[in-house]
Image 1 (cartoon, rainbow, N blue to C red):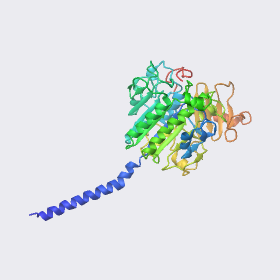
Image 2 (cartoon, helix red, strand yellow):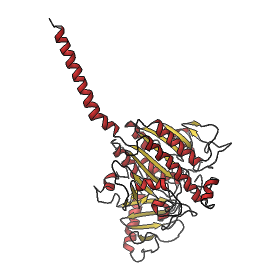
Image 3 (spheres, helix red, strand yellow):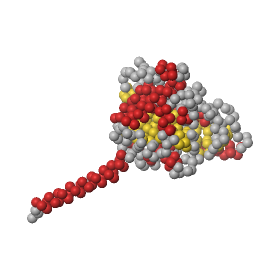
Length: 447
């Protein structure tokens, strides 16, 4: 017969074992859970290459955006996969050249059933959700106007923003379906904010406060500094009426709201945060010393301000001078979150972390490709071949290691190199799909 003493001893042993298990669980497993980094993409719109202090300009103060670069790494040769808004964002969301699935230009708003990232494509927020991430999209969407393409149908838990490629920065009394602000998948109601750039930054900060206890992915896509050229009077006063400068200052202030929210929630050290523009600036913006502008295959259309910070893993105040791409952010994010990368479709980006830390000293990309309408470009090492829409005739060849401004055409002097690169481009492009919306590549509409 079992004694009371024996029962108590067994109970004690069970309690002790349970207690030891809990201690081991919270010591070993708890930190692993807590170690999942938050991930934030901050995407500017049509920003010039040299419109932020960290990238060279000294006239417009951008201290909060600069702090991302100063606390992390400036990628001096950071590219996007397209020279216009929507396809650039499609590449960012999938980690794949958008030409692979026929997303060749901006949405023309004529074939809405096809105007968005195909549902057969895997998008980053969907994958991050499998790893326990809260996913939030704020600001400009520009990836579809009908419900099946809405952010909350493409992997995001929450959305606050608008569907169109642009809209006024001030409240609208009678917005269209495309320009109205939405909360998740419904109209957000009467617009009572003062200036949309500040509004988006404040909303992002509130989401960070709300979900600070769980890992989150925040896609914060500003429409600044895209047209229309709307600015607050107070910001104009500080810039002597320079509208682009005033809009840039507002963008910096809004980014500051996000960074402040990370600080007050003690999230800064373990947040992977990226700042980029979706494409190069238009003709009224400062892309120096780069040649060309938005829509061009020259560097000014595709090389953008690009900074990445993750204090827990990356050194501070460094520059990385090898070519990197916004396509890399898909793999980089999943690797940081320790989530397996889907193998159903080939990715065109790589995990940048080992390159940025110096663990891998090779180039992340030996070859990069671009195409838009009748224009295209290929970069192999430092040699770049360009057929730009504004120039008729043979492609131009540049050595970017010596000629960042693409002034010295080497095609005549190095015909074999030019021919080799053209064949590389043609081989790559032969495997891509035609435009989802036919001949209309969205060059001029909903930009």
